[in-house]
Each structure stands twice: as C-alpha cells, then as structure tokens.
Image (cartoon, rainbow, N blue to C red; front, side, top):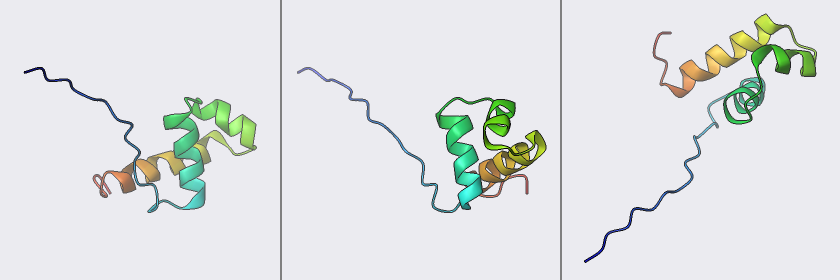
Length: 66
C-alpha cells in the first residue's frame, strides 16, 4: 500500500480584521512587501503601517499579547 501526502493551500480567515489591517497584512505577509516599501507605496507613514500590521497579527493570534 502506498501513501501519498497532499499539500493544500491554507488561507487564513481575515474577516476579523479592519479593511486597513487586512490591506497591510496581505501586502506585507502574503505579497512580501517590506513595511517601509508599502508605506511609501500607499502614502502612509511607516509607523502607521507597523501599527496596523501589529494589530492584525494580534487579532489573528486570538489577541495574544494584547
């Protein structure tokens, strides 16, 4: 008998994030933008992008560290 493992694409449920948090999270975590690069691209400050990303990560981790 042969066993074959299959890989599947896992997508996180981002529905709990605000629109701004989701935008930043997708750009930095999924599309591999740097925070500063994304800040320049969107006209936001690097601090704002960093705060949105941190809040998104906390919310997705179930509020750990909040």
